Image 1 (cartoon, rainbow, N blue to C red):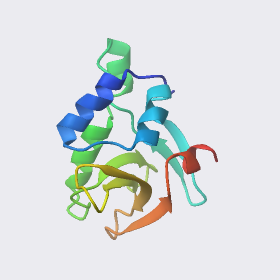
Image 2: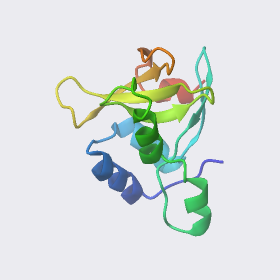
Image 3: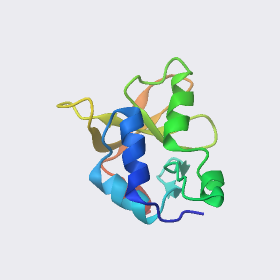
Image 4: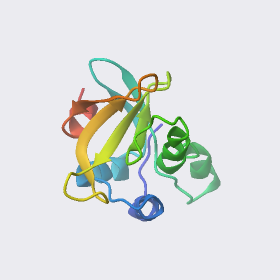
Length: 133
Protein backbone atom coordinates (compact mmCIF):
# COMPACT_ATOMS: atom_id res chain seq x y z
CA UNK A 1 0.00 0.00 0.00
CA UNK A 2 1.56 3.34 -1.04
CA UNK A 3 1.93 6.16 1.46
CA UNK A 4 3.56 9.62 1.49
CA UNK A 5 7.30 10.02 2.02
CA UNK A 6 9.45 12.88 3.23
CA UNK A 7 11.49 14.35 0.36
CA UNK A 8 14.70 13.90 2.40
CA UNK A 9 14.59 10.15 1.63
CA UNK A 10 14.42 10.86 -2.09
CA UNK A 11 17.40 13.19 -1.75
CA UNK A 12 19.32 10.47 0.15
CA UNK A 13 18.68 8.04 -2.73
CA UNK A 14 19.76 10.63 -5.28
CA UNK A 15 23.05 11.09 -3.41
CA UNK A 16 23.53 7.32 -3.06
CA UNK A 17 22.99 6.73 -6.79
CA UNK A 18 24.67 9.93 -7.98
CA UNK A 19 21.66 11.09 -10.02
CA UNK A 20 18.66 13.43 -9.85
CA UNK A 21 15.16 12.01 -10.37
CA UNK A 22 12.68 13.80 -12.66
CA UNK A 23 10.48 16.39 -10.99
CA UNK A 24 7.15 14.68 -11.88
CA UNK A 25 8.43 11.34 -10.59
CA UNK A 26 9.48 12.90 -7.27
CA UNK A 27 6.09 14.61 -6.88
CA UNK A 28 4.27 11.31 -7.44
CA UNK A 29 6.48 9.51 -4.96
CA UNK A 30 6.18 12.20 -2.28
CA UNK A 31 2.39 11.67 -2.42
CA UNK A 32 2.48 7.88 -2.82
CA UNK A 33 5.79 6.15 -2.26
CA UNK A 34 5.27 3.01 -4.35
CA UNK A 35 2.07 1.52 -5.68
CA UNK A 36 0.96 0.00 -8.93
CA UNK A 37 1.03 1.22 -12.51
CA UNK A 38 -0.45 -0.17 -15.71
CA UNK A 39 0.41 0.16 -19.37
CA UNK A 40 -1.10 -1.69 -22.30
CA UNK A 41 1.45 -4.51 -21.99
CA UNK A 42 1.81 -5.14 -18.26
CA UNK A 43 1.02 -4.40 -14.62
CA UNK A 44 3.90 -2.95 -12.60
CA UNK A 45 4.76 -2.67 -8.91
CA UNK A 46 6.54 0.61 -8.35
CA UNK A 47 9.58 0.40 -6.08
CA UNK A 48 9.47 2.83 -3.16
CA UNK A 49 12.22 5.06 -1.87
CA UNK A 50 13.74 3.69 1.34
CA UNK A 51 11.87 5.31 4.25
CA UNK A 52 13.73 5.01 7.57
CA UNK A 53 11.24 7.02 9.63
CA UNK A 54 9.98 4.02 11.65
CA UNK A 55 10.12 0.20 11.72
CA UNK A 56 6.86 -0.22 9.81
CA UNK A 57 8.04 2.01 6.96
CA UNK A 58 11.47 0.37 6.90
CA UNK A 59 9.72 -2.97 6.46
CA UNK A 60 7.38 -1.63 3.75
CA UNK A 61 10.21 -0.04 1.76
CA UNK A 62 12.94 -2.69 2.05
CA UNK A 63 12.64 -3.43 -1.70
CA UNK A 64 13.57 0.18 -2.49
CA UNK A 65 14.79 1.77 -5.73
CA UNK A 66 18.45 1.82 -4.65
CA UNK A 67 18.54 -1.86 -3.69
CA UNK A 68 16.54 -3.07 -6.70
CA UNK A 69 18.75 -1.09 -9.07
CA UNK A 70 21.90 -2.59 -7.55
CA UNK A 71 20.44 -6.09 -7.84
CA UNK A 72 19.36 -5.53 -11.45
CA UNK A 73 22.91 -4.48 -12.36
CA UNK A 74 24.03 -8.00 -11.41
CA UNK A 75 22.16 -9.39 -14.44
CA UNK A 76 25.00 -8.31 -16.71
CA UNK A 77 22.76 -6.98 -19.48
CA UNK A 78 21.10 -4.25 -17.38
CA UNK A 79 22.01 -0.80 -18.74
CA UNK A 80 24.83 0.66 -16.63
CA UNK A 81 23.17 4.07 -16.34
CA UNK A 82 19.58 2.84 -15.77
CA UNK A 83 17.62 3.16 -12.52
CA UNK A 84 15.02 0.45 -11.83
CA UNK A 85 11.71 1.95 -10.69
CA UNK A 86 9.25 -0.96 -11.04
CA UNK A 87 8.92 -4.68 -11.68
CA UNK A 88 6.31 -6.81 -13.40
CA UNK A 89 7.17 -9.81 -11.20
CA UNK A 90 8.60 -11.71 -14.18
CA UNK A 91 12.11 -10.22 -14.21
CA UNK A 92 11.47 -7.16 -16.37
CA UNK A 93 11.79 -3.64 -14.98
CA UNK A 94 10.60 -0.17 -15.75
CA UNK A 95 13.66 2.06 -15.82
CA UNK A 96 14.65 5.70 -16.00
CA UNK A 97 17.69 6.69 -18.07
CA UNK A 98 19.80 9.85 -17.93
CA UNK A 99 19.15 12.76 -20.27
CA UNK A 100 21.36 13.08 -23.34
CA UNK A 101 22.72 16.37 -21.98
CA UNK A 102 23.67 15.22 -18.47
CA UNK A 103 24.38 11.69 -17.15
CA UNK A 104 23.48 12.78 -13.61
CA UNK A 105 19.92 13.90 -14.42
CA UNK A 106 17.28 11.28 -15.23
CA UNK A 107 14.89 11.90 -18.09
CA UNK A 108 11.11 11.86 -17.60
CA UNK A 109 10.87 9.09 -20.20
CA UNK A 110 10.13 5.59 -18.92
CA UNK A 111 11.44 2.43 -20.56
CA UNK A 112 10.80 -1.27 -20.14
CA UNK A 113 14.01 -3.27 -19.72
CA UNK A 114 13.58 -6.87 -20.84
CA UNK A 115 15.72 -9.17 -18.72
CA UNK A 116 15.97 -11.92 -21.32
CA UNK A 117 17.35 -9.72 -24.11
CA UNK A 118 18.76 -6.71 -22.24
CA UNK A 119 16.89 -4.39 -24.61
CA UNK A 120 14.97 -1.29 -23.55
CA UNK A 121 11.79 0.05 -25.12
CA UNK A 122 10.16 3.41 -24.41
CA UNK A 123 6.69 3.02 -22.87
CA UNK A 124 5.85 6.53 -21.66
CA UNK A 125 7.01 10.13 -21.94
CA UNK A 126 6.51 10.64 -18.20
CA UNK A 127 5.23 8.88 -15.08
CA UNK A 128 1.78 10.51 -15.28
CA UNK A 129 0.96 8.53 -18.43
CA UNK A 130 1.23 5.25 -16.52
CA UNK A 131 -0.41 6.37 -13.30
CA UNK A 132 -3.52 7.76 -14.96
CA UNK A 133 -4.36 4.41 -16.61
